[in-house]
Length: 349
Ligand code: OGA
Ligand code: NI
Image (cartoon, rainbow, N blue to C red; front, side, top):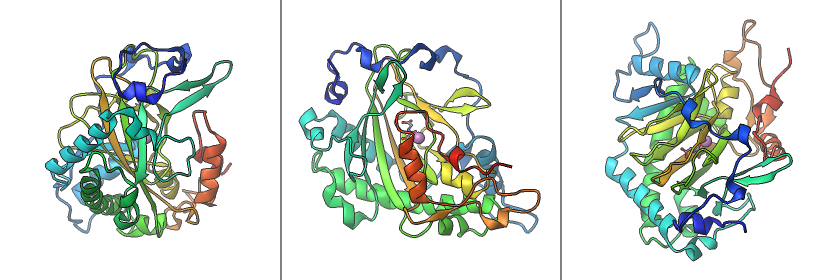
């Protein structure tokens, strides 16, 4: 019998039914994960005045992290701790409601604005393997257009989320401008190139405690497909891992920090200088885990390609130009696989 996501999030007694078990060579191999290295932690209060000789210390740290890791954590980011705690609390409450409350959002239709779904991968000879998690996705901006679509249970959900979305909107602007300067560009350049009316949506991922984390995965290895992602994770439970030099590295939750990662469009716009890096979430035997990702994505009509100022004889374009709609079509074509979407837009040399 196929286990439904309701049973998952409800913490009913669990055994790992076969539809969650990965083929042997796809399992997470948790004993091999590096404990020693970690992604950079950047204090946004660091000195941030360009001195005429080069970028500010803050911008230098960010651009180094974007080149080497494609991931970093930020502290002193200006979003109040209480607000982060509040949003994690309402989202957790949503996942702990009786299953019928979430059933109204359950869909496999990816064009739905508000949806609950499960990640899966497809493997030859096995078919579909479901990930040990449940995801709730909805827009986060513009507030007035989407709030009425959001849950009324828990009762504070709409209000708390709208407040969180406003704060993260401000943070996105700041990050886009820092990353733009990190590329040696005008501070508004990146935001301008990602374009008018960006697609702004959030994904809350709930990973119930799992009887055998070695056999399954919470979220499969993937790259984010927008521009940048701002991820908030609960403290005290690990799960997120990123690839560094071919090895998996755990991203420890740092108190009051956000995890920032570059997504595919930033890699393309930067002509490969800044990296969109593969990452995944593993499960935890004892504790459930919650993460909340905020995404910033071009709209379908936006044309993306390496920014002209970054192209010269030594740095020929690595990607062809495309509309984001084309990018998404390629994304859906690769359904069920470990996607390699930006690779399909690489220019051969
Ligand atoms: C994502 C993601 C990781 C996590 O939502 O794209 O990578 O830690 N989440 O849940
Ligand atoms: Ni991701």
